[in-house]
Structures are given as C-alpha cells and as structure tokens.
Length: 170
Length: 170
DNA sequence: ATGTATGTGTTGACATATCAACACGAAGAT
DNA sequence: ATCTTCGTGTTGATATGTCAACACATACAT
Image (tube, rainbow over all chains, first blue to last red; front, side, top):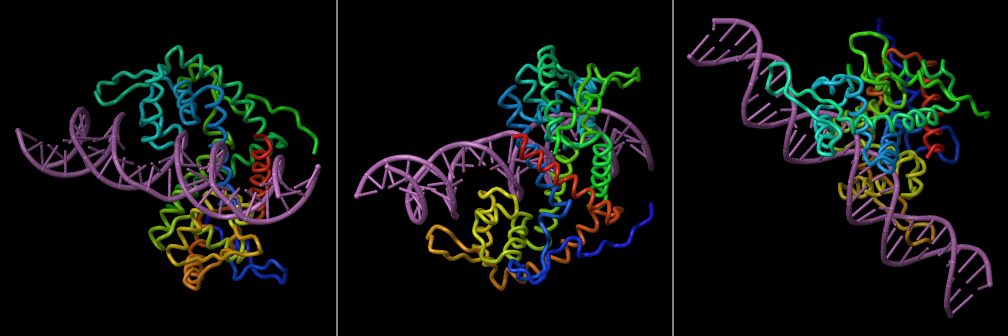
C-alpha cells in the first residue's frame, strides 16, 4: 500500500471563524476526530460492560472475555490467549487466576514445557458462559442499533485498519 | 429514525465449521466486532498518547485535553468542560487542579455563584499548548495513515452514531 | 560444558475515566 | 421564613489494561 499525502491540519483543528465562541487560539477538535471519539467510546463501552456483567453475573468484562477465549480455544496458554485476544498477558494472567479461584477455570502443565499452562473452563464456567452469551448478543444489538449489516462491516474494516495504524505508529 | 430489525447473531458469533481450531461451543467473536475493536483501540490510543506526551512534555493525555479545552473555551467551568469534552467531571476537576499546581492554569470565582470557577491557561500553559499542538497533529496524521478524507468523515460519523447508541442503551 | 538469546507466566506500578457520594450554595415553591 | 430541588466542584473507590521487571525454563551456538 502506497503512502497517502498528509491530511490537511484543518481536518483536526478548530480555528477562529468570527463566531462568539471562537477559541483563543487554534486548537485540536475534541469532538470531530476519530482518534478522540474512539477513546471515549472505548472507555464507556468497557465501564458499561463491566457494570452490566458484574450486576447480573458477578464477573467483569475482562473475565467474560477469558470465558470466551477458553470457549474459543480450549487448552490455550496465557501467551496464546494474549495473542488471540490482543490483550496484554498481565491482564490475561490475572483474569485467569480470578476465574480459577472462583471455580470457573482450571489449568494444567502441558506440552513438555513445565512453565506453560493449558487453560480450560470447568463445567461451572461453561454454564456461566452459556448464561452470559445471550445477554452479550443483546448488548451487541443495542449498541449497533440503526446500523445496517453493510455499515457494520465497513465500520469494522475501518477499525481494523485503525488498529493496524496504532500498532505501526508506535 | 425507525427501529431496524435485530441483527443476525451470526454477525457476532464464532461457531464450529469443521476446521481444526473450532470452538468448543458457539461464542462471541472478539476480533470481528466493532464493540470489542473500539474498546481495544481506545485503550491503546490512550496509553500511547499519555506515554508520548509524558515523555516529551511532562503531562498526560488528560491534561493535554484540558489545555485544549481552555484554549477552545477560555473561562469555562468544570461542568462546562465536562459537557464540552464529554469527559467525566471528576477527571476534569483533577486534571485542572494538576495543571494549576504546575502553573499552567488558574481559576477564579465567576458569575455571581461563588462555587463556580472560571478556568484559563496561564501564559506558561499557552506556551505549552502551542508546543504540543504540532505533535498532536502529527499523531493524528500517523494514526489515520492510509485513510482518505472521505473515509475519515465516514468513520467519524459511524463513531458519533455509535457513541449515541452507547448513551441511549444504558 | 558454558554462554547467550528467547520464551513462560507472575507481579508491580500506574494513568485513565467511570460511578457514587458528599457538603454546600442557589433557586424556586409554599 | 422554611423546605425542596437542583447545581457546583471535590473526593473516594475501583476495573481496566498497559508497560516494565523479574525468576527461571528452554533452545541454540560455541
């Protein structure tokens, strides 16, 4: 993919235009930039998800994600889970240990490497997963209310490209 | 706007399709859902922004946003800043106080209501704002590398609609 | 055998940004 | 004047998820 020309600064700025609420100087727009909007949306989603899952099922969103991960790839390790989910291994490790102490997950050494652990759901964990899943799907629906399937696909594609840029711009 | 029909669950699920890495049971896709992708992107943006601004300018992203806000609307109050930026007033209050203790911002009572404070940048704060702004614009450019202006406009529109859904689905 | 590089999972530290609670001022109703 | 409601900004608590550091196992090179 070829490099595109730099975007015009105007896209990201608020400058004086003679109106009564002009900025004191040109500055960044906080309401019109995908970078900022993603940040805000991400935060609210996370908090709301945690509140909802805590209230109804007693676990936060991180732990729900690990339930999903173990359902998706039973027996995977902390490092694999981190790669698969894109979440930092510190957070993965902690969540798995929380789930284990609640009887929802268990681990065992595997693959001839004594440090490596395979993580699986217990039957209790599987039950909880299947209780939560319908609610998770409802949440998806509500959050994407008003979007057509094509729009969702497009939105998802933008986000994936954006995530790629985040990773390469570090 | 009329309600659209519920989206197909299939959009959000991973189910067994006979491949060697099938899930143990149907579960949520963590890599193909805007809800999850926004969350991940938001986190990384925030962390990277804070790291970048701390390293180069000694303030985190929250404080940068308050510099922007005071440039955009000099004299505004905590409550106004919270409304304008969409950030919770607790975080706004704390950031403004940090900036004040670093000599970058100052407040005074205003408008006949002794509780209400007007916040402004000091000259030092204005200097810092103008040092950071070019870097902030570079960051925007790097993060939106490969997007056309039309795509950015579309992406922004999706995010704004999405944020609207977040607020109404609570 | 020894040394180096890489990988495993755990733990520490911490910025963010939310919701909740609070004390108290201000406005409106009686 | 008193009471109720709403608004102001501060403070507390906390889940998330990141980066960093660590002890130690494993693999590879000499």
